[in-house]
Length: 262
Image (tube, rainbow, N blue to C red):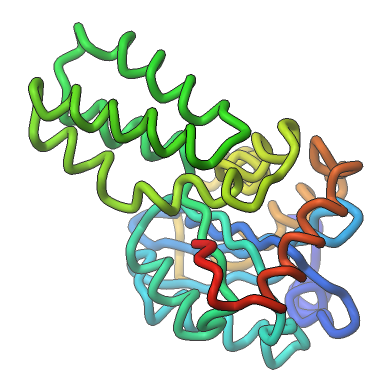
């Protein structure tokens, strides 16, 4: 591993003060039975930055809360509305809301939602489900998207009540980007966790050569080294020119916090 322990420690403790992160992606990566939860921030001009990492047995609320509290201590602003893009795990949502409260707008990953619903549905119905969800999630109108998803829930109830329940659970949070009125390209970028998963894929490549994990610190150091490498390859997200639309929507939420937005 090229990066020294000292350089990794400095990287992991960088100040976050003075930078506005309008969106934060959170996901976990597993190493030999241990989960490392990673937060990746998106700046106002569409640049990505790894914010922090925390080790735990699973993606539980305590781990996520601890991670976000550490980021807050390092300067992450928790007083302004922030869009959180999550895979849908209830523990992630709970941890985010403990630290950010009403300032957290939750976008549940539409790709994970699709997979979860499919898991309860016979394969012969997957193509129709894909068609229905793709049509709903491509809508620029929140009302139209929600209406199409409601129709899909009704269709699923006749096939599999469990699949219908899976789609219903957290349905509103899969449509936050539509409710914010984001343009097409940026809406698609922020509708799923692909941004952070691509970074985590680099860590898996870096750690593929490891045959024996000695301790938890080793997991953290190797994951950090992979994320450092991933950062060198970061480019601005697709739709970064549309970031002013997200900023305006978040600012409006701050002015009118009663507006439901995730």
